[in-house]
Amino acid sequence: MIYNFDEKINRKGTNCTKYDGLKKKFGYEDLKPLWVADMDFKTPSFINDEIIKATKNSLYGYSVDSDELYESIISWQKNRHSWEIEKKNIYMINGVVPAYSACIEAFSDIGDEVIVQTPIYPPLVNCVNTNKRKVVINELKEENGYYTMDLEDLKSKITKKTKILALCSPHNPVGRVWSKKELEDLSDICIENNITIVCDEIHSDITFKKFIPLASISPKIADITITLNSAGKTFNIAGLNCAYAISKNPKLLNTFKTIAIKREINSINFFGFIATKAAYENGGDFVDQLKEYLKENIEFTKEYLEENAPKIDFMLPEATYLLWLNFKKTELKHKEIEHKLLTQSKVALNDGESFGINGNSYFRLNVALRKEELKLALDDISKSFQ
Image 1 (cartoon, helix red, strand yellow):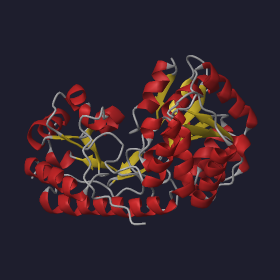
Image 2: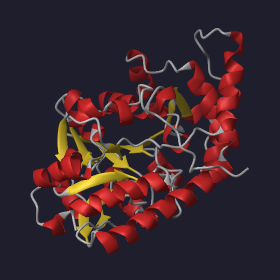
Image 3: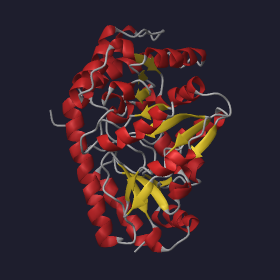
């Protein structure tokens, strides 16, 4: 089947955060929304058809998971990422961010330290603060737009109170797919210092080079790792609130389960189970075509900006549909860049400073939309930053 990613879909007036939340977030309604990390592509029919079938009874009571759901997750991880897991390693939860917050409570105490590698997806910092733990910043190193881990800085910041390292893999917003060597070196430090790695792999299916699940590398790494994932980003079903945690360490997983139950995050949306199972059973070809379309949009954006707005730059991402735009060559202050984007370009991008102090002069752009709409947005951006 050929999937049509150029189909026009009207999301306005559907209680869609990306469109209907513009006024609340940015103060303007007449913006082109290239911010929230979801896609302006229709959820594929093999998911929609299963949801419609489930509505036939017209009864939406409490739901229970099934062996088939677990088998779909197990099969997907094996076939797409060569990671062998079992049902006993998986625990279903209603979202990656709620699960991450639960992990902070599970694996540390109030006042303990959690290391985050900025620039980073904002909830990975926010959840540390709301759980009354201390955020320890380990900034990524950037050279000509390419980011790597600063492991010497990491080692210098570890104390006896450092309990957790939050890893974003693939990384949001810089788009890195960490190499096996990078993951091994990072894990060796954590093993040596008895630090639990909470690994967010929600973008693992949208990669343009080989992705390696952290816990698949070795038993000793798996022993300190809890992985959080979901089909939500890959298949545009984030609103159905279905995710899962994986750990091959029974003690680690059971500790997490205790907090997940306490927080009531183990009750899954009725349609979330159905959509996740359908996605993982039937979604391989869809994902392959999706990645090709996204790659074309990314390359188009790169070429367009080089020709029409050379003061805006970004490194081609190794994963995700999110571009980490660098506006430093404009020599404008961060707030001036933001103002021009909102009032002249009329586009809504994610503010780079929300990802950390090293996000100054950066803004995150989402290219998961029709090429025609992407070009219109780039036209308006380039006119303001020539």
